[in-house]
Image 1: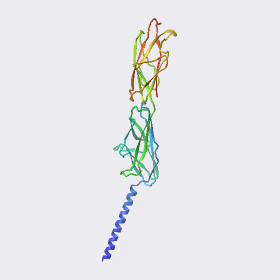
Image 2 (image 1 turned 135 degrees about the horizontal axis):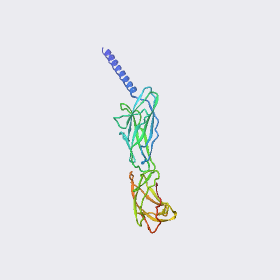
Image 3 (image 1 turned 90 degrees about the horizontal axis):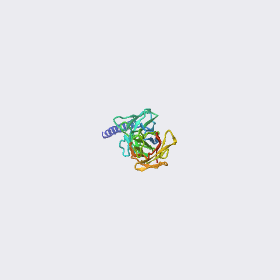
Image 4 (image 1 turned 45 degrees about the horizontal axis):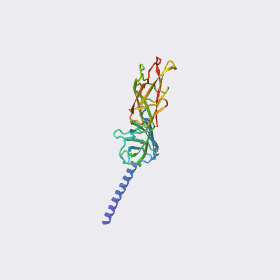
Length: 303
């Protein structure tokens, strides 16, 4: 009797052990994805703080599904400690990672910085993102970079791969612009001609304008007079009389006899800095009647 009891007990435990092993095997097959991934190249954004529109650069990650079944991936941008990182600050600009329209990647609206990607069995899929500046700033000239990671998970949160390192580079080229306020015009990359009108000439008349400068690095202003500090008679040219005048920029006398340079380092804002420029007529004593002109060229170049 005792022998039969022992045999029955052994059979029951044997079945139970076999059933548990089958459940474990099925559970592993249901959750595992056989994935391979190519290390992505660094995402690079060429940034001009004074350009209209947004700047962006591509970030493509190629996944390969080695298994037969479809893999549903949850991709999450995270920092070094694993916290979600939906936005990235580089040099003062804010960057967002946006799925490209041509990609099979979709944003999870309820989870910023998270995306889903479906990869059919034995096939390859690309997670295509645009690294886009969504909040502009006047970024210091140079290279600004950051490292983050992409967590690769199943839809239930199970990690399928070690986090993928991502490198983002923001290249801010040296930029500088100048504008004359008190005449007409606005900041621009092209040249423009503005007019300062003295009206009827008289000794000592002064007009003031403002040289507005914005730049993302220290820059050099160059002031040059076509007639070396003399207003020439428009109709008579070199055969006419002249009127001398002086220029003072930001409290500094400008030598109009030659090209004059001045180093500026404006605040890193869109407004930059406004430098007063005073233009004063010299002696007006018996010159020919008529219109007198000179052309002052003000250039700026980042150092």
